[in-house]
Amino acid sequence: MADENDKSTKQDARQARASRDDRLKSALRENLKRRKMQARERAASTDPSQNEDGSLDEGAAGEIAGKTGD
Image 1 (cartoon, rainbow, N blue to C red):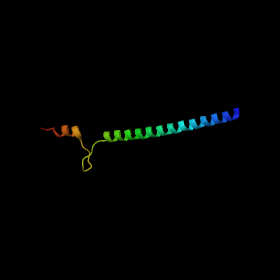
Image 2: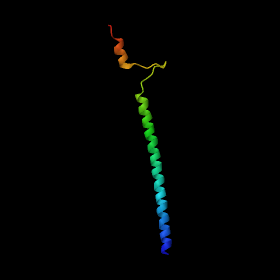
Image 3: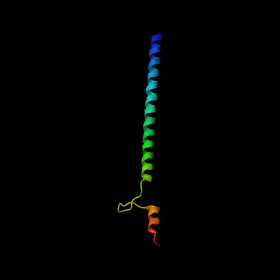
Image 4: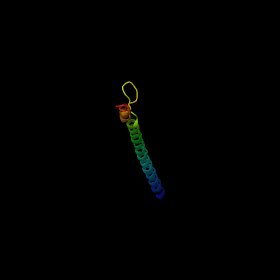
């Protein structure tokens, strides 16, 4: 009788462990997706902007350089 209780307790413990592992896997997967999305957004915002024709926009540096000789 004690053996039956031990078996059921061990099975419960294994099921609880498996359930916890599944929750952790899901949480880690979601965290990784979120971090990848954040990294893509950061990379997109730090890329130099391009004009419609594909040339790089010089921004403020181009404006200063264009004003020399006035």
